Length: 152
Image (cartoon, rainbow, N blue to C red; front, side, top):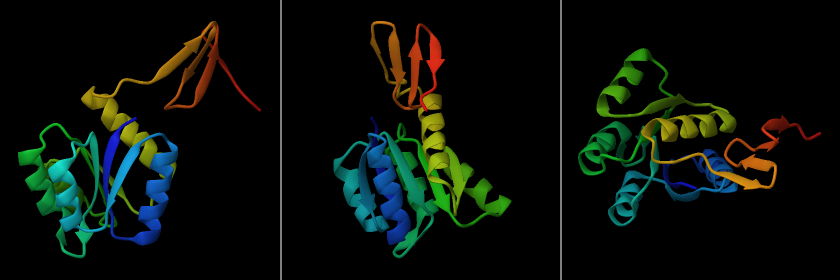
């Protein structure tokens, strides 16, 4: 489980992402603007930040630059409709760990979160074992005697 700060002003997209992440076992705080994001970040330590760029009260890239100074260990994935290479370069140069262009599939969001977490080494893959069975929870895979079991 990761503690995630989701900063997204679109109610439908934010709700879908929030519900998807919570269903995946994460604790998620949803800020709908930069002011709320700053308030959350001031009192909670996050494992990951999902950051929209165009917010009603400011630019997410500017906030990212603030975050990098304050929260050096929290990886950031930018979420935006800006799909030009120059926008991506600006985001990465500002300190983003990944950049996801809207619209996107929630499965891809989960995969990118997992990849960023794995690269940062802070979040080991949860695995549970009972006898000859083992479950990789994040990937939702089941193994028996080391062989993957496919459920139909």
